[in-house]
Length: 64
Length: 494
Image (tube, rainbow over all chains, first blue to last red; front, side, top):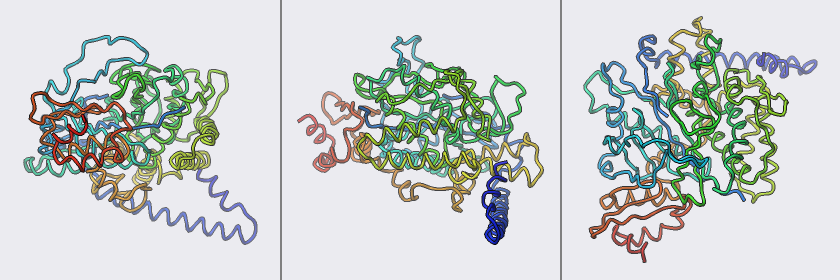
C-alpha cells in the first residue's frame, strides 16, 4: 500500500529520530484527518439534493 | 527545426436544466452565449476557410458537409479576448484564443470557465423562478455519452504525419497518469462487467481506434482532421481529441506543456520508436489502474509502466532541450514534469493538489469511508459530476481551490483580465483588438480572417494566415493610428 510505504520511510530512522519521526507522522495524520473532515462537511453543504434523481436526469447528447 | 507551438483548447461543456421538464440543451446553450455576448452576437463566423472533413493523410473528403451551425442559426460569437464561444452538438463550446506559452493557455482555459459561470449568472435573471441551468466542465454523462475537450497545436507541415502517429500514440496512452480528470465507474463496451470502480480518465472509455478522422464515433487516439486555419503549405493544426477537460491548472499546464515539447521533438526527429503492441487496449488498461502500476507491452517485446515510459519521454526532452535556445517555458515544463513523475512513482495519491484524478479520488474515497457507501452509490456519481460544476460557490473543485487545497498557477486577477484581453503574442491580439475597437464595422471573423464593412462597395477581408503575426508588437501602433476601421483597412492595404 502506498500510504504505508510513505509512513515507513518517514519513521525509518533510529533512536530519538525515529520517535520524533513517529510523533510528527501521527500529528500529520491527525491534521490530514481534520482537513478531510472539514472538506467532507463542506461537500455536505453544497452537494445537490436527491443524488439518485439528479444523476438519473443528467443525460447529454453525445458531442465530439 | 521545430517551430513554435501556438496552442489552443476547445471545451464542450455539459449542460442540463435541473427541474426543467423538456429541457432543450441547444436553446439553453444559445441563451448562455447570446446573453453573455450582448451586441457582439451580430458579428458572424467566417466559414470560408473551414474544411473539417479534410484528412491529414491526404484523402479527399468522403461525404457531403453536414449543415453548419451557421445554417441552423445557432449562437456563435467572437469575443474581445479573441476566443470563440458557440453552440456545438447541443453543448456550449468555448475555444480559447491562440496562446504561445503553456501558462498563457492555462490562464485562458480558466477564463473560459469564468465566462460560462458569468453566463449562468446573467441567464438566471431571464429564467422563470425555480428554473436553472447547470454547466459542467467534464467529458461524460456517465451513461455512455461523451463530449470533448480538444487541444490544438501548430505543427510544421514538413513533418511526416506517420512520424506524428508513431511517436505521439504512446505518449497519449501514458500521459493519462497526469492528464486524467478521474471517473467513478466504467462506460466502455469493451469490458462488460469489468470491475473498474474508479479510473484515471473521463474520455478513455470512448476510444476504439488508433488513427482516424472521426470525432463522434469510433473515436481514434490520433485524429487526422487537416484544417490548419493558417497557411496550409507551411502548417498543420494537430487536432487532439483524446484529452480530458481539466479543472486543476497544473494538470492543464502539464497536458499542453509536455505535448508541445513532444511535438517539437517529433519535428526534430529526436524520439526513438516506442510503439505499443495494441495501443487501444493499453490506453484502457492504463486508465483503469489508479495504482499507476499497470504495465503495457511495446512492439519490441518490452513491457513497461506508463510512468516508466513517461520518464523515457522526459529524458529525451531534457537532452533535446539542452541543444535548443534556452527558453524559460521549456525549463519550467521539464521541471514540473519531473516532479510530478517522481510523485507518481513514489506515492500517486500525494498529488491531490496538482492532478484532477487524484483530487477527485481523495474526495470520493473519504466520502465512501465516512458513510460506508458502495462504489455504485449515486452520491459518488454526484460527487464526480459536481467536481466539474463551473460555479465557484457550488463546484467541488472550486471549493477546494477557494480554501487553497489545490494549487493555482495564476492569480485570479490574471484570469479576469483574460476574460477580456487576448494574449499579446499571437494573432489573437489582432482579432480581439479589432472586435473591441471596431465592433460595428466587423461583419464576420474567424481564426484566420476579419471581414470589415467600412461603407465601401466591397467588404474588406483581412487574412491572418500566420498565427504568430498580428501580435501586440506588430499591431499596437497600427491600432493607435487607426481611430476607425476605414483607416485601419487603408493602413493595412497601404
